[in-house]
Amino acid sequence: MIIFLVALAVSAVGFRRYIWFISIGYGFSIAAIGAALLVMFGVQGRLSVIPIIMSALLIVYGLRLGIYLLVREYRSASYHQVMQDAIDNGEHVTLPLKLLTWVGCALLYACEASPVLFRLDNHAGTDVMGIVGAAVMAGGIILESAADFTKNRFKQQHPDRFCDVGVFRLVRCPNYLGEVITWIGVFLSGVTVFDNAWQWIAAIGGFVCITWIMFGGARRLELRQNKEYGDDPAYRHYSKHTPILIPFIPLHSLANEKWLIG
Image (cartoon, rainbow, N blue to C red; front, side, top):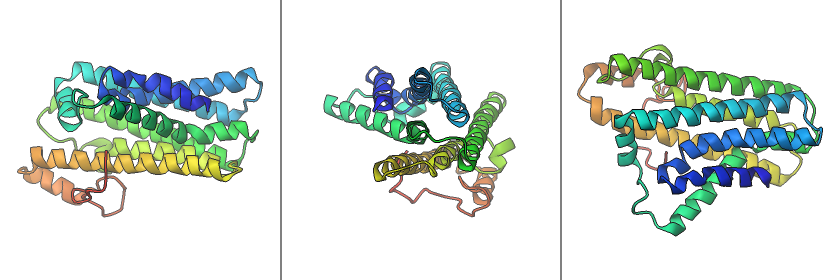
């Protein structure tokens, strides 16, 4: 599959720094997949409105995330240290494990974006679910962008305090929520066009895996914030009354959910 090979090529940056397999390599892989879809099907004259929009959104999503993570890693010493502490920097990772991580990540990124490919490959036109999926995807990108912007601005003014303003009043991890909504949109866009079991498996597998990873990321952030702000009564009140990831659902903690990874 072409998009798998594209993701494999771009995510190879992880061999330079292990964390990049799942951070910078992730963002730029998704952007490259979006560009590849436009080029491949554009040359064949098989592009239609919804796939063009969704491929463009993949590019916007991936470039925004990749550039944001790249800039933050090089400009923020604290963020760099947090990531080094949270995830092995690669010095003790064997080559076989690096290869497995590389291939696994590329496969995940291809599966996440696969509904857009299947819509193009199956010659699907514009339908309601395609429009809904594109709109939901755009909303997720906007939410994730707003969350990152809000937290960056807040931390510049209050470097030693947890962020609880703007979209952080809705949930404690709005950036992860935005990520999940983005991929809900991508998945929804394809539910009317999948035409065999393998397409369903790829699309469902990509969506389930990224959702699991986002919940794991929320858990990891909660554990880190509990350690950093646990003695602050304001933080305890905030964490007790603000859902961690899903709005309006009283799920306030994932700390004990050790089956999650992120």
